[in-house]
Length: 466
Image (tube, rainbow, N blue to C red; front, side, top):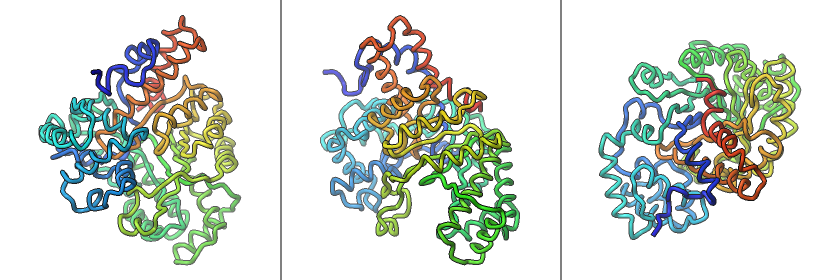
């Protein structure tokens, strides 16, 4: 009987198969945005079992387990690693048609050659087999990256990070490049709790007092210079939506002074400050030649009770329905008007906004750089078969998918890299299906193959120029 994950998984005709196997499968991986812990890469950590490397920290799995009625003890609680795995194995058969079902079996097959379907009957055998493999140095986190042909991984750090692990990695003999992205959202979101405490931490990292708005700008620029000197070439922002309202410099100075004095800000003051500081950051990114990334549309921390118990990034977020187009356009236009719009990637979380984003990027692709402004790949709730296909269709219909820089994991897991394979198979099947139906010329298969190779690897390599 054919295995569930086989050579032509998701490839529905001979053209899709040829595109994948000849043009995409063997391309290296440039994972230009993830949340991997650099310390574990530096230490080449070896994990004791599958729970530690695969379930801990994975809020995708946690949400599914909670939905099935599994107690928190077996998810984030104090149950044993084996018990947590057994409860995940019990959940897996119920995840059919959720991307977790595909990802689970891709990851088990690619990393451990475990081809049995995971369920309560196979759980014990798979747990013991994978734990034995993981205990070997052949399955250290560096070797897990080698197994998937990773060429570069780019983690994400706060401006106050020392980057000591990246510095040590740069001096090591590890052949896979590990870079970082600058994530200064805590300096932007002035209405958040703990903002002044964060300002004190930023001041310490920058070795500068931050008592006024100019001090803040100087401190952020200092940290950008520091990150740049340590090989950073891109930033990332996770925002509900882009703020853009009119302001004066004096207004922003007063707003920041009020915040530092512990005063309550109005909604209008918050928006003015967020607009001003994000524009300043983006102009500075342009000066340094960085790529800027905006992840837009998440509605975070919806369950206040569970957030108070477990904290952020534990599975209580969803898709938001914020208006995006007008403010985003004004923001990009303000930068472009000063010729200070750097390379930009916009990730969309609400599928209703796919066509908005696909057309928005065309407004600011000015011919200076191939694919200067990108509609990023399906993100978070949309990095699955339907979500990625819809993103590629919107981009194809309203832009040039041939300039697309492809997939990334956006993950904390060292076992998440088969998502690149998943994306590549969907891309090849999408194009192969249109060749089969005569909507693309089969005589141009080699050219279509080049487009596939570019999206899989070469476009990102050229775009980021690490």
